Amino acid sequence: MYGLEAISAHNGWAMAITGPLIVMSGLTILSIIISQLHKVVAIFDKKEKQAAEPAVKTQAKITAPKVMPADISETAEIYQKLIDRLEQPFELKDLYRVAEENDFPHPILTAKLFRDAGILEQAGEGVFTWNR
Image 1 (cartoon, helix red, strand yellow):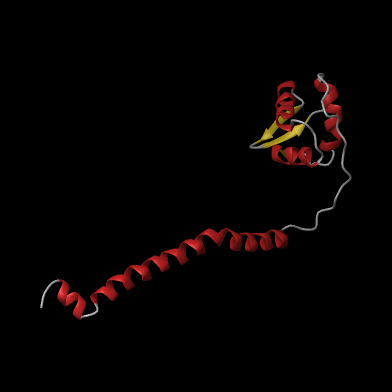
Image 2 (cartoon, helix red, strand yellow):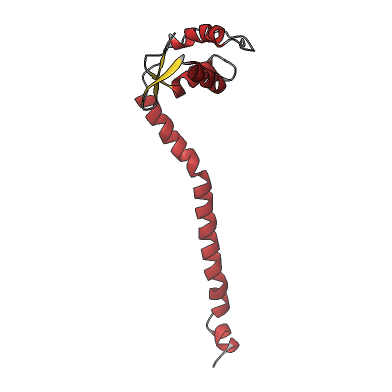
């Protein structure tokens, strides 16, 4: 017995259907697990951050005008309150973070203007000092 008769006689059709169904169900389960993996990683990442970071004191919010003055020295006086919260020398990302927390407009552009004016000077690899 050969061909389709042999397949029918020995449950070949059932095996031919069962094999792909097992493979497809395995791939479906794997894709669902991979699509939800970021949630599991976020839980572990959050726990690590909470354990690594000490309790941060919440400081009063510094108010800033919606539009900064055109004169860079006046803008520097407004930013001085933020700089006082940072340890010298500091990284620009710390200045950006504090400015964003206090809703200061355009902190990246303002930092560039401070660098051009010499108010913000590089003190090493990735760290800056405030010269005011």
